[in-house]
Image 1 (cartoon, rainbow, N blue to C red):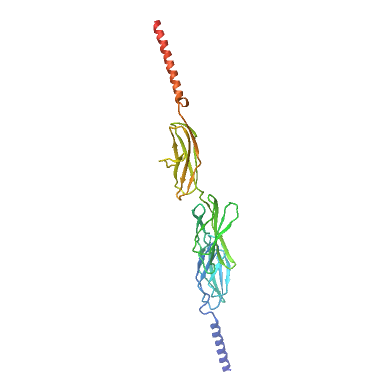
Image 2: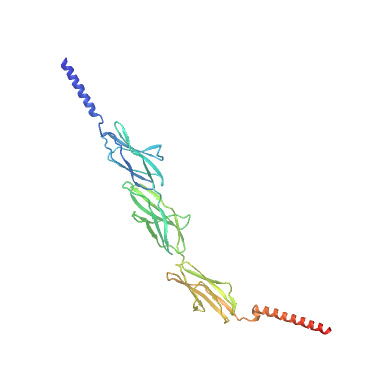
Length: 340
């Protein structure tokens, strides 16, 4: 009887020791450290330290729009070795809050709360314009990860406000942030935008930049005009040139009857002459690129000036009238003195 009691006590003690050995002593639920390693306009890639929990069940990832919540479950990960996760379909330029909980068979441990933001869309700018090209540059604010890698930039263009966009180029290098569109028409307006593509496989995300407008430089042209085309000898007439397009500054060379005018290099030519006749006048304009164009021709008719064809004739008539009036007054005055 005594031996049976001893055996029962020993068995109970052994079972008690076995039970304690099965309890999660050490390496229970682990407080992992959460951080973000990449950001795009619509994704945030999260990373955390691996759990050391011997009784690991899953990582549960929570997300909220406010640090005080509410938080919603966005992922449950049962692979303890997985320590990254890409949160997708987010709004650009938005702050989000995350934490992760390490669950095991006996409890849980919560990580730090992480604040992370999505980036802004790419910003597109017009760098330079010529008669047939537009050079574009852009800024990409994204950082990429193996879960959400860079795929491409796509440059699009249209020539009408309500027209359809067409693809100009697809650029597969993340380090490229400029592109020159060629083959455009001078003096025409175009609209441009880009979008970046990120992701893998069929899980791709596109975000469009702002739209920019650019007008190519018109071809060089020049026209001249004057207030009148008929003057008398000794009179002046200003002939003005209006140059447009090309690449300023402009150089002006004036011609009268095919002969260059010395000393006049501006866009206004004051013409006068003492010789009656017909004078054909035009200007040749050269821009900084070396392109030269001629203007239209203006014909100035110059007639001889005479007192009968000028304002001087009127003053002569007035002077004669005044002299006659004075003479009449003197005659009347003399007749009056004789009577006295």
